[in-house]
Image (cartoon, rainbow, N blue to C red):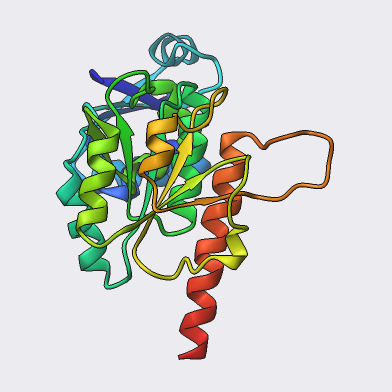
Length: 250
């Protein structure tokens, strides 16, 4: 991803607070006060250039009129390697909790998945290099700042990456709308990686066979399966719930 733009009050606040992607400049609406004062103060404290622009100039920078009076120019987002994700988990002191995505192609889904990952304590996300949306501006906007807190590894071969995680002691669970263990009947408190498939096809057969186990979320409605974002939210919540429950019982 080349130099991009982050716009909107909450995304820019998260950018400045996160310490992840570096802001090169923050442009705010000339004459605006109130909610933008905190953004200006944070930017100046971090040594980030602050510029004042007209509403029309901000719209041109953002490519949208929904900028809420602030647009940040940001450095390119960077991927990390697989080992870095495991180091992040080790530093946290908690059992590794990773998320892997198999050919998710909608940037809005990707951004929503990153928000879910950050909300429930995922240490990092693994994505494939091919047929997978990357760190686009659309994904960053939907993530609403989560991109500053969740590390992402981009691997040429997802199956090989999963095998590497398994060899390091991480249990790999794939999400499937078919036959699988109900999430609350599986022990998700150890070192795990949840794998979710694409919007239309789900997990590719080889990816599913690589998993140590499959999880299926039971539904009672007439819709056969859940959107990948909804499935991720349910599964990540269940991991967090089980880990919190185990912590209280020890």
